Length: 231
Image 1 (cartoon, rainbow, N blue to C red):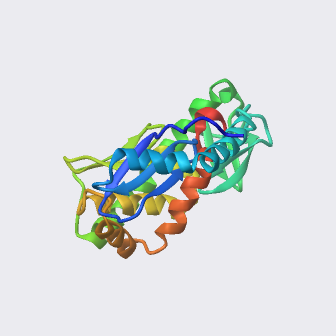
Image 2 (image 1 turned 90 degrees about the horizontal axis):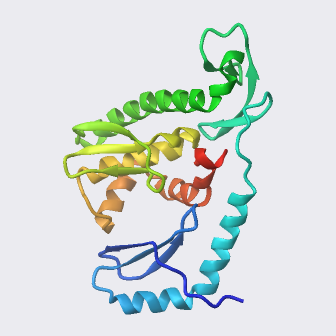
Image 3 (image 1 turned 45 degrees about the horizontal axis):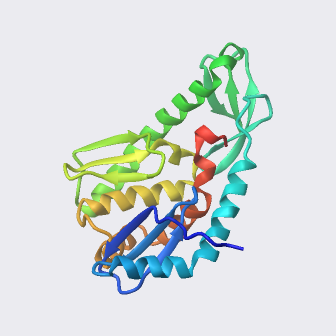
């Protein structure tokens, strides 16, 4: 039985006419509401949906608690572009970590620093992939950002600042390529339209038509990319 009223983590107002409630991959409650919707009305709707919200949050907590932190042992799998690749030790490797032949190859001397090796490899690979995608969507949109940076944010996959800097969470390199592509298209669209109005989503759709499916993937599976909580 559910008795407490769920806390709202984020309210996003736009020109929409209806209210929607989302539970993200970390169990946070995100409410999308009309611009002038009174706060008491928003809280009333959330209260009415309390049982559904808390049920979803319970599912997410159970999923997160069942995750095991990586031990960096041979055979253990790690995500890259949505696919799991097993880890193998290679004493002949010329790099600390590489991805070849369907395996992540780690030099045995780097086992103690395997976490840092993986994070460094992910960031370097993410940066190259993201820059390539940003250039593609800048050409499509006719808008070029001033700067492109990697983000370490725990709750945001991408952002666009008023000074036209676009930031992308490096963990996205573990997601399917279409997911990363959607986030890039999303932030490039923000160079044109800074809000999340219907016009903005139309722009995202014109740049990346399959955005709804990839947005849903992030909502449902984003916790898989949380490096600090394990893969």
